[in-house]
Length: 330
Image (cartoon, rainbow, N blue to C red; front, side, top):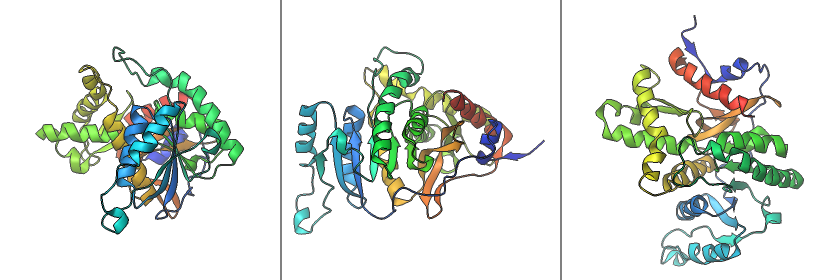
């Protein structure tokens, strides 16, 4: 029996012998990107604030698109009024300007962020509320993926809406663009939640320096307390805490969107543009089969790369289960 396993072996477990290449990138790291955001609800608006505040070195401009014209006008006014007091005089960074774009202009950019959602579950919803949105949001994905196809889009697509990983696959199927052009942004907050709980429990403290997150932004999430010396019992305990963290906030009477909008989306997207390591979903599969899986990853000169360390069998089995379940949703 093998002692170690690797992420790159997952497609073979689904009967895939020739996965599509990830060896390219849809933008130039270090060059300021034109960013367009679709839908400015709670998540989109919070993410927009994060990108405006932190994106001076990475973003040239931010275009916003939403069905609610009054909301767009309000955000164009208010977000552009967030600024350092003497930036125009050379004291402080000049923050990226925000402007309104039409649906027809959405894919005239370097980076497109999909935050649209139908059927957002009420606070009373139980279970994995993310998966309840799959069918409704697939329809939205199909429409905008068609626009990307028509535009011959060459940039990066960032999927933020739930369920992140299956919606990435739906965009891939409907758009005809390359798999290295699509990233899912849902795993960043799961790692952040794991860090939050690790800070509160000495038994889990080593996660902060040695831990890893894998898989989807949902119930099949895999949190590993560490890779070398992996403790399956401790890791499953921490995973359970992370998966249920959104319900803790919901039970207080609030929708848990602030941390996802900033940890999964704004911060991770900025790290993407910088070519730095972050958590995002990458495609492991061929034209017909496969899935987007959340892993530690980055864009390099060779294209989209992911961390592919040797994994113990107990950890690999958990990741394989999550991957095959995602494949079945496609």
